[in-house]
Length: 364
Ligand code: PMP
Image 1 (tube, helix red, strand yellow):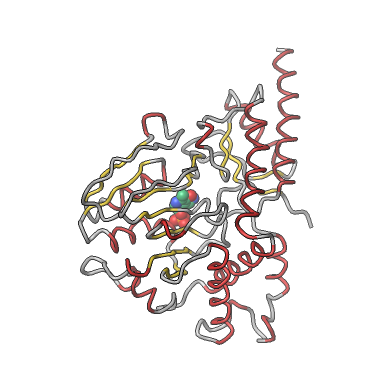
Image 2 (tube, protein in one colour; image 1 turned 60 degrees about the vertical axis):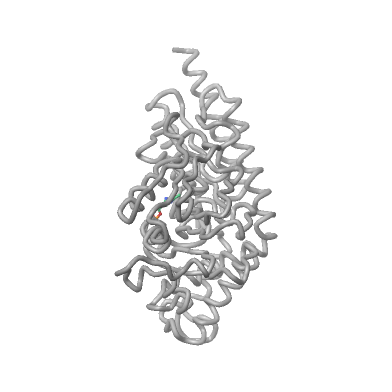
């Protein structure tokens, strides 16, 4: 068996020991004589799985009791709509920080349900930084941010403080990668396929008193209060993805928890950024203070070299390094499950590629 280093932005690499455990339990989960996929979502076994996943996550993120943890479907993209459907009706208006492609999508969806005020934007410099000042409205229902911008490779190193306004964060590409104080948020959401587990699961952490304010006509499946009351089992939840997420949470806890993971993530990012900053061939466009530790975009001076790099890297077992189609170039996503050894292998490969191509340039 050969496992590659997979730098995909999502679905992304998962911890090998989690996959091995899932494989070992595939045909007979805990003596039930069936796989987790075949268990009733109301069974005792599955109840234990979902409750254990939630309890482990609560410990990892120190989630206070007045917050609900929801295991939903529809991806982070459905949260772009569910957030305003459920939380905007109080004033009919919400503030958004415009920091890139995914926040633009969130803004577009929010516009369907009320008035959107852009409280900050980094559009003037192609989203290569995080705007620090906020122009908050006096009558907004909440402030929405994308805490880590997956395509642009930026993140809010320091989270904004909107005062009494609930802070809502799309943390899809950085949840569980650094220590955050959940109490500072009204709601956090994340698609699972980066730092949590397989696609098909969306995690929502909501201060429970914010649920139940949905606009009239909101369908049951799109109401936070319904999911809070039914503990994510209003209908059949994404059972297998929840099971795997639980295994990932337990792996994270065994690895020392979020603070320990944050240290490793910072070391990984530092290794890659240090190399990029000293490279004569590769570069990264993001302002240093606003660089993501999870998604690192980079380029060479030409499309030809970018293509050569991507294909030669793949042959060396370093895969999914192509940048997002809207951005081009390359991108290394180095989520929790990417070991330091993977980033080391990548930088070594980049060094060799640089040597080879600088020599080529000198000859030319
Ligand atoms: N927000 C962010 C920050 C993302 O990176 C992504 C997916 N890459 C999304 C939202 C959309 O997620 P989904 O595909 O789960 O809808």
